[in-house]
Length: 228
Length: 304
Image 1 (cartoon, chains in turn brown, purple):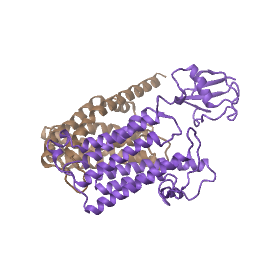
Image 2 (cartoon, each protein chain N blue to C red; image 1 turned 180 degrees about the vertical axis):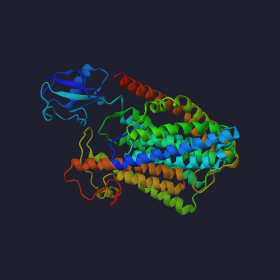
Image 3 (cartoon, rainbow over the protein chains, first blue to last red; image 1 turned 120 degrees about the vertical axis):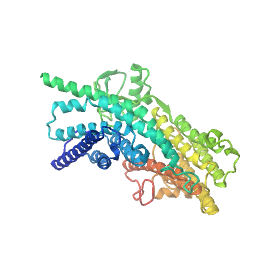
Image 4 (tube, rainbow over the protein chains, first blue to last red; image 1 turned 60 degrees about the horizontal axis):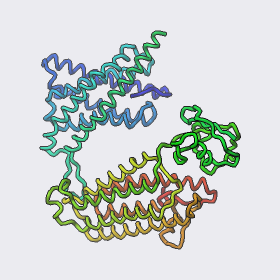
């Protein structure tokens, strides 16, 4: 997603700090999740762990800064695509799991939370080390390999979570603004969540095969370099 | 004389155009080039002096461009083209049909008994205004507008139509909904909005007529638009594109009259797009005419 451009040393220092911060944040989530598993012998109930919930909310929301990085030109990526990717996760974090307590105990929470955690630790440490021009080969390999499994698992978890939230959204009419009203416009959260779920159908294969393409390009480039 | 045509993207040679003289225009080059590539009709072709420079006008002569025999031009395929009239008719007929479909309140959208429920006066007036606006646009496209470019890329049809058709459905769904709430301030808001809407539509029409009279039939000539005897055109004193000013005014009036947030969102989107266009046209006027009246703004007097 992110590429280095011509940066001032101040911008570089800031980005380094940001990526190290994110790496630490997501590492804490991983550590607490493992601890939770060792104690309870179960992956269920991760979200009820108050620190995991807090860390997830803080670090996932902070990721919106990456849109700002693109807009300001600190990072050479398309700000809109970055915003869409981050939105889908922030939406799940706040709009579904935080808003609808009934889904928090589901097994599917771990199903998206653990893949997110692993992906983010790899991604942010990759960025941080990339800023220092010292990414070890195994980290590049992880970044362009783990997603093959983690991405589909994560997406399934996200979809299961949204799907299981639907009956509660319907029942409580949360964030729903019905007609009649003086604005003459209604907002139906239930429909919005369904539309967002349907949007995975075109978007998931697109992103997945984009990553497969990137993997081929990057790993082939590296192996050619090695042979030289 | 002979000119080599190169592909603007790759820089590869596409062939040599012959049978030209220094007095030949770019249009002549296009007609000659078509003999090499049968499917590339002139409207689809664009030529430039360098790989990334601006597209050359049809009227420019080779002499004026300093192109001698053995010179080269870069070619870009603009893609399949459609006439402006076709584009505009598709764009504007859609909203008209879509809006009226919602107006009759089909059972699959609003439920079985919706069609027989009484409609608020605002709903009927809104349908009349919407119909009038798009019927006017359709008629203007056929009888009034003279376009300086004959065609536009076929892809624009999809882009523009989805904008107009989508917004038409969005606005029509809520205004024609059986649970529609009439304007809070009653008759004053409704008829005040209607009066303002009619005023702006008349203004918009007057400007379109003024633009038509500015450009003699069959020509691509461009002149500075000026206020005429019609008071509606006096807005030319302050802005370059009063047609857009009136159009925005009409949609603000429509939104006030119906008190409908989707209509206001449509107004906002339209205002943004028209401001972008107006700024472009304003810039072109200033570049083209050294004596362009100072103090004119693109779309909003004294401001924008």
